[in-house]
Amino acid sequence: MMRKEVQWLYRELPQLEAQGVLTSGTVARLQAYYGPAEAARPRWLAVVIFGVLGALLIGAGIILLLGHNWDLLTRPTRAVLSFLPLLLAQGLSGWVLIRRQQSLAWREGAAALQFLMIGAGISLVAQTYNISGDLPRFLLTWAILGLPLAYLLDAVVPALLYLWGITEWACHLRITDDCNAGYWLLALLLLPLLARWLRAGRYQVRPTLLFWFLCVSLTVAAGTTIERVLPGLWIILYSGLFALLFLAGEFWFREADGFWNRPLRHFGAGGGLVLTFLLTFEWPWKEIGWYCWHWERFHGEWWRVMPDAVLGSMVPIAAIVLLVTTVRRRASLGLLLGIAPILAALGFSLATFEFSFVAAWIFDIYLLVTSIWLLVTGIRSGRQGQMNVGLLALMALLVARFFDCDLSFLLRGLLFIALGIAFLVANLVMLRRKGANHEQA
Amino acid sequence: MSRRNWLLAAFVLIAAAQLAAPAWMIFSRERTLHAGKVFKFRTRPIDPVDAFRGHYVWLNLEPNEIKVADSYVWHGGQKAFAVLDIDTNGFAIVKRLEHAMPADEPAVAVETGWAYKGKMHIQWSGLDRYYMAEEKAPAAERAYREHSRATNHTCHVTVRVNGPQAALEELFIENQPVREWLRQHK
Image (cartoon, rainbow over all chains, first blue to last red; front, side, top):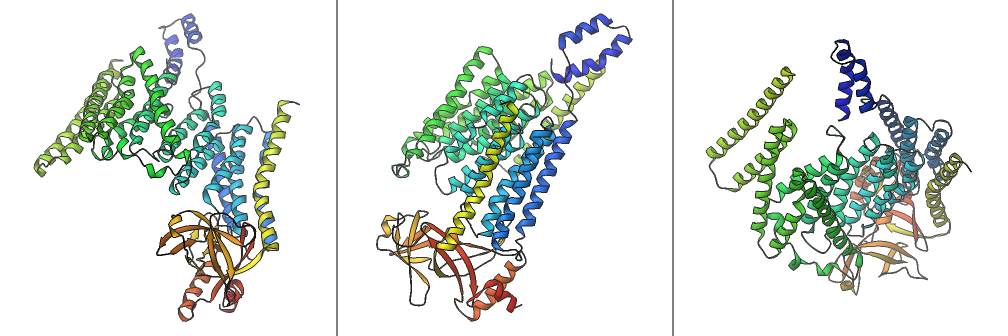
């Protein structure tokens, strides 16, 4: 039973016992069976959030104050002052490690402040010496120097800032067409920390937050590190990545409840549906495949091929391995969303031989089947969210295809009205059914 | 040693590494500013706002277009070294472009741009910002624009070059340091 349900049951138990519905022995046996109910949302979370916000604001304030660049100060004085914010933050973190190691709020706040002050220190020296420098190198230095804080202070904010830093670094190197495949090795440095938090409790706030950020970061990085040589590879990679995220969330993080507590499942499903919608158009399938290799991009640099070869194969293969497990478990939603990389590979092969319209059709049918399945099973199981996702996907597909056709404004108008009515009716019926169930209960 | 002591020892090491990064920047710049050879570059400043590092005057060093005999071996966005010399007016000129840092001649790292009919555009990407106080940078920019309409090329910067390191030293308007010039032209 999920955490919310257990909490509800525990709230009801005293009343049920008082009314004589359950005996005190049954209540005790129920409590022994389900174990202790976790706190709904710990109060310390608010303290941590405000602690981190406070630290970030103070850090930003110090950066702006010093960034004012007082002309009265000499260059050596300004150089020495540049160390001051970092030294203060380090002092605070040291004090927290010695005196307040048990307080998550102190650890998160101090670590966030120190992370920011590393960047501030480097920036202030750069300002003092007119160093315009190179932004990717600055970001990488900052991120690497800040990462150990996540481990030493057991804090999530430096891990998130580190992820932001390496993602930005990868994006900047992509713009200048330099090697950014190192992102994947840098991201791996977070794994021991994630493993430690997962062992302590896989549905706690810190691993959940890190998973959300990881999903975003991996999605951005996947796009920036591949397709140096093989056009269209992004289609296979992204369909594999979203399927992998969804299936991993479905298998290993099934017991969590609520939208935000299941980052892998929901990010993977959302990303997969958006990607599927994009692939129903013909433009992504144009001029891709083996006949469009960028031979000129080799220049004898091995790294241009590596991300395409490793990511383009490993990620979809990992997703397909999980899909096989899904078939064994007979999880129909997993099967439906997990099949996307196979269809993408099929579409890619067809598009290579200039059958791009067939590839788009395949995804038209795939999105149609998926959306109807989501809609129907959502209605049957009384899951309004799932029903609406199915309805939205179906509407997006219909609207996109009807815009492709040369229809009159009258027909288009009628279609929109019909879709709007369908949306309203489905939700009203669902609400009424839920209301009836509630009254019966 | 207990777990807590290990943790503290690791923290001290990490803190030292964090301090070492800006300390190294200071050390290498100070060394260049003290031991480097001075070059004067003509420049045209404009003033954007960099939210991260306060205000600065954005410099456009000259020459930004040079003659190269082998323009076909270069492509845009490449790192190169501009080998420097001084013309009869005392300003820096670029003798030639090299792929690697020459051993016995002063050179500054630049980025290549477009190449056309034996000419190549270069960007002095490490020397394009001169930081000033928040209220002075826009004033310097305004003053420069008004001034440069009447006269031509009266702005220059001094750059110290020491081995592969180049450090911007001062921005001059009409041969006066910019802060001094601003004080006199308030």
